[in-house]
Length: 184
Image 1: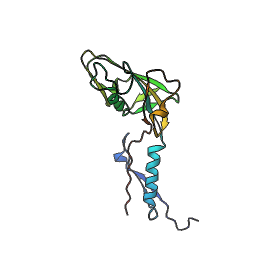
Image 2: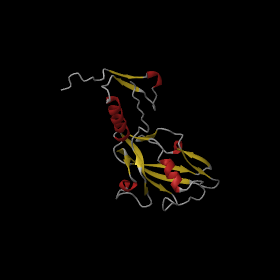
Image 3: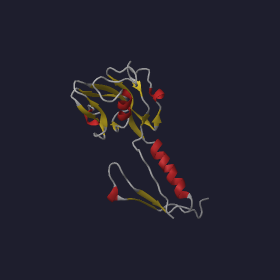
Image 4: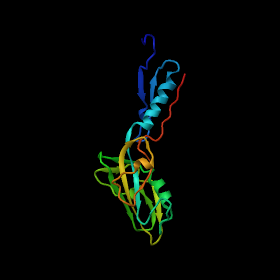
C-alpha cells in the first residue's frame, strides 16, 4: 500500500537553540507536498490539543462587572482581566484552584505578586497586571482550571462559582506560537 512512499527517516532538534520556551525541530525527507500537510497538522495539534492551565474566572474587590473602574487603580477591570489572561500558569492538580493577588502599596503589580503554593506555579513572573495609586489597593481572586485549547467565557461559568466572579475566556494551551517551513 505504501510501496515507494518516502517517509521521514531523520528527526532532529537544534540543541543550541533549545530553551524552556523555544525549540526548533526538523523532520526529513517527506514525499512531495507532504511537508506542508504534516507541518500544518502538527501546528494545529500543538496549538489546540495540549492540556494546560488558565484563569477561567476573576473576582476583583469592589467590582460588580467587567466594565467597572477601581478606586486607587490606574486600569479598569477590563484591562486587568486582559492582563491576567496573559499570565502563564502550571497547575499541579486536576481540581480547580483559587489563587490570589493582594496589593496595598502603590506601584506596578506583576504576576510575581500572585500568591503561590504547592498546587500551582506562575511560569512568567514579569507579566504586568495593573498599577496601584497612592492610597489604593488591589485584591483579586482567580479561578484556575486545566483544559485544552480555547474556552469561551460563557462555557467557563460554573454553578458553584461564588457571587462576584466574572467568567473570562481562556486559552489553556501552553504553546502560544508555532511556525513551520518547508524547504525543497
